[in-house]
Image (cartoon, rainbow, N blue to C red; front, top):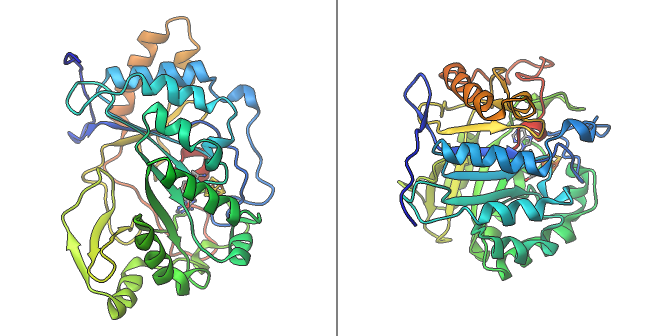
Length: 340
Ligand code: SAM
Ligand code: SF4
């Protein structure tokens, strides 16, 4: 494939933006307690970008040097027409350095993955991030307010069977799954999956106080080191995780510590919500309305202007603070809006 000339997106701190996280729906079939309330108010459908708009937007980003797109949500696989977006974007995939899209991936809770895994692999998806916080059925139901663990495990098995590389993402929660983290890691490594632990972030109102469940990963690490030998690894995924190799399991463990360890200096990403709002920072309120640009009478020119604006307003770092009990969330929007 011939090399294409692209003008890259570079923000005012000279960070090159090459990674788009695109939320395709705010809806979800689970209600994870740290993510959203039971009675989550979802958006009217007309506010959400159409499949054509999502595709057009993605092409606009690819033309500006985005090489990696992660489809997220909400739960991306609850959107009925989502397979068509993967197929269409998959046709844009090319080898590293060809000047276009190099990687297309998704983050999913896996409840519906069994029905999609083969088609995703055929479309060109190579890796999936699957969120799983427990392997205990009752605990899963408590945490996600839905009795869906068997379907999730079926989805994970289907992904493996389809040849997709699976990465498990686990939110570490004090008093909830803290005691199970070593078992989860051992299970994932036994299956040949990498696992990344994440600290809970103060995003959006939920029915509980997250400070009750905040578990610093430094503490988890101390516990894990009593059982295993953790060898710091230079592996980099292009994301904010730091990695260790666990000698005894032979698997890789990632840790994302947004609250205890600032990861902003190397940030290469932006996020777009299902309504086309571009948030240059997960932890900031800055945003640019790409839907207005897309639906205007000069979509190309206005989209270009919006992207330039996004680069000027991307903040140097986030300002999360989970330490205040009962405090308002750092950002009023839920993670299900901006995606993971
Ligand atoms: N529904 C899909 C899933 O769960 O994988 C994709 C969207 S979900 C918002 C993406 C990731 O965000 C999940 O791994 C979830 O555990 C994580 N997440 C949601 N709310 C969070 C919060 N407040 N703090 C940290 N991680 C959160
Ligand atoms: Fe749904 Fe993912 Fe949020 Fe859980 S974390 S409620 S699966 S969007």
